[in-house]
Length: 468
Image 1 (cartoon, rainbow, N blue to C red):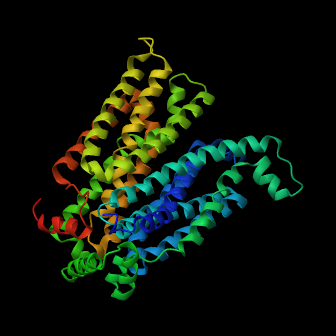
Image 2 (image 1 turned 135 degrees about the horizontal axis):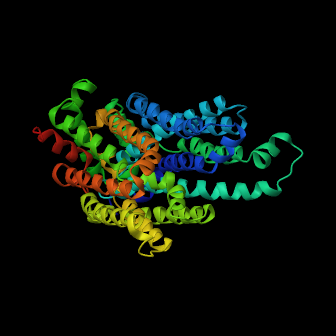
């Protein structure tokens, strides 16, 4: 297929769109290094600290609600440009905010950007990628998210160390990089956000979206850069136009078509369930969880950095194999490993100390859990959601599934401290293990294998699937 597909060009388009994933990861993770400083400076109560952390998730839910309509109406490219503007505004605003209300407002604005890129970036990548490479190209987005997480951890560490001896005659610089370094941590996102804004202008609009809007000549021009074979281009154009002609209904009527509605419900289910299998609890509250095992805060942060590295490294592995072995096999192997790892973590918290197990055992279990998670559900979720729906309403349908993902993320962020206190750490991780089972069952019984299939072939599968 290498002589048919211009993979170099497709990779360039995918990497540009995936930069939105880096901003997603950075904006989400950077907060972890600022909570104690912001709480101290503004004398926050525990509820106010929770709102400072959670307000960006509220913004993400808002962003997801509008992302589909914006991308279907104004195009994938313009919507990505809007997200870059929001990230830039948020980063600058957080760095110079004068009170908590302003800080929360700018965090919400950044959260809206997160919600938008979580929909439009993987959607764009799926629409410009040939079927044989689509899985690994969309996985670039998830890889970029993990790089953003690690980048935030490293930037927080670097700026905190820099602030100790930082001295400047400029009052604003002294505040941002010295006395109130949390401003620098949040504001450092300005550079990648501006880069994202500028580089988007180098990529074209999604050719499938252009066909939806009747701009066939522009779509042909873009497809000619993706495919090196005129017959393949003609086939792709005809396939997409054929499916569009069968969709001459309003967006909501298409969504309510029995087979498509089934796909939407399945997407909502796997997006929501994926959040209750523990991954965000570990990424957000890892240091706190490690401290409950008796580790110092320094060791806990070191362990969390190791988790971030494994998360990123395994995402690279998943990217390389997702199109070769398929999405469903990754889920079967990965979720099985997640269940075993979660049960071992629960066992450690229940009986580990009485058996003399060291914290190294806990670290290994967590690293195994992240390895299996990053190689399965984290790798496939955005691939699944970007592939499952018809071209005409793909953005809207992805927004519905994405909304459930962010609601689940918000709920797990709010409930994890309560679960750790009420259910105990052991009970919490046993619950996460149990929640893996319905996810596995849905993927096994209800999801088709989409590897190697065109987006139009996947759409036909759902349209034929009228029952259930």
